[in-house]
Length: 104
View 1 (cartoon, rainbow, N blue to C red):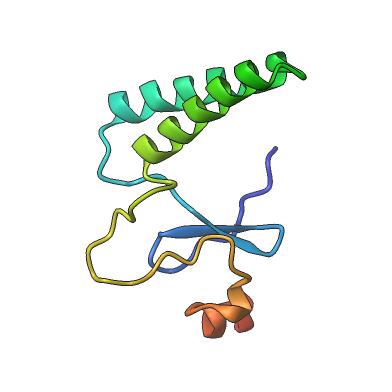
View 2 (cartoon, one colour):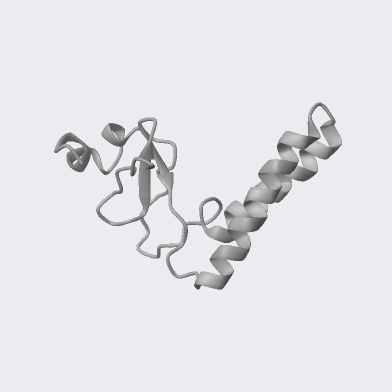
């Protein structure tokens, strides 16, 4: 059984390896989300398969980026309240510091 990752109270991020990682845009319908998750997994396999081929690596990594953006995990944030993107930040150094200190 996979251990669940802590999720920020507003549902924007999960915490893994002491870093905030943006979650998928919850406004995506199930079919769209599934299509992009499948593309993301395929693109990640292509990164691995590309090995030392720089051209193939670039193409595969661009596919990963496009899928992550379509899912809302990278690129412009999917919320509209003006809060900044804190992806990659340690929770104690973010706007979630009090939540993190409380034991999440």
